[in-house]
Image 1 (cartoon, rainbow over the protein chains, first blue to last red):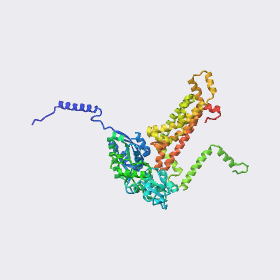
Image 2: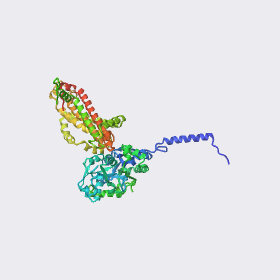
Image 3: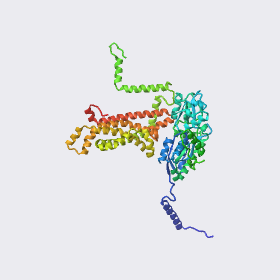
Length: 334
Length: 275
């Protein structure tokens, strides 16, 4: 067999052709060697336990891996963030299911695009403790009638869960005097007899128990009693935006779900403590002593929304529950 | 209360009288209040995680300022307040002067302005979020709107209160209208304008903080809410104290600027100022 040999002249021609070809391709605009474009997103979220998967996804560069530059806008969720999403100032924001149902009922086209934080069947996967002064005797639904109970926001998720809890234990929730008090001030209000009970979310529940000198006790966890195994807060975007940017939304969902996986792998470990302490600005000791942590899930069930919606109808904050499945985009649908 | 010594002097009475009449009385009151705070926290009069001793608060303030946490937040608030103040004050003076000089303009826009004036700032923030988002433009706009009204009202008041003699003298000397406006009317209105500006300095800071608390991503207002929800009460109060000091210094600085700008007014008026 004859050996084929390439002459030096031919090799030089081949090499020159390759170099010229590469240069032409590189200068051909968004072509062969161009890096994928990065999408910039503004995401509104609250620096609370619910948001751990989102912050984990950002810290571990899961969004960057999806070519997304996520600009977190902290301190804005729900009632402040959703108008900003509707106006296009934010692309995605966190909200609890009550706010989302109310928005859907008003025809504002939000769709849930990711799972989020919820509750399981009880502690440790919980978010909200019903706290009273020790020895108060409050336990049955009827015992709360005529009493003053603190929630952070009326006509929203804590208020709803409290009413469902009282009615579920045989009481009449319309006879409970429900007051609005911010979470950090609830322990003081209880200790100073300004209220008889309070729905205290973590991390304020564990802080209150640690700092109250044994004068307070947790008698129930109303979220899991009223809405067991339910989603409570998740991320949503406008339907128009989703339709126009379906690939981006899919990428967000992938990155966020990796954040949930990271949270599950690192829960209660030093990496988790560091992450949560960092974005909540809580002292690490407070993070380590949490009594309950939300259940983080990747999907939202229409049944969760329907159950909350029916309760909202019963308590007069909603005229008619909108189509629950229609509120959930495919990336979050169970 | 007094006692007399061998010389018959009422020492303690004079001493107390001097303290009350002098500037030190304000400082001493502050010290007494801070001592009360410290005692109530350390002595267990108030048992709460949200009531740290004042020494702890001062230490947090020092750490926060030196480390940058409070410094950067304060810088953001000062930026929001200052930018909004400049825009609102400029608009207030311009529109106020137009309304003072041209009665048809005043008649046309005054009803709308009077309707808008009483609306409280927290109420306008949600609609502003829709149009301006959550960032600096929204906060600066809120501050501008708040500063605009007192400056505009005082400018109109000043412009319509100028002594008619001034206008007559300007006409006698044949001054062109624009020059008369610049050299006669505007200086005569300045005491009123500065009265409006003085009120607005404090308002600008307050409203900047409120907007940061409601829809914040930066600034002292956002920092205060963050520290409240992080259970870091000492840091929260530290930020409030730093804010109070900032407001005090801003007021002092404004007073100095006012005295320089209106030196002729203070000299001729014996220190009395337009309100």
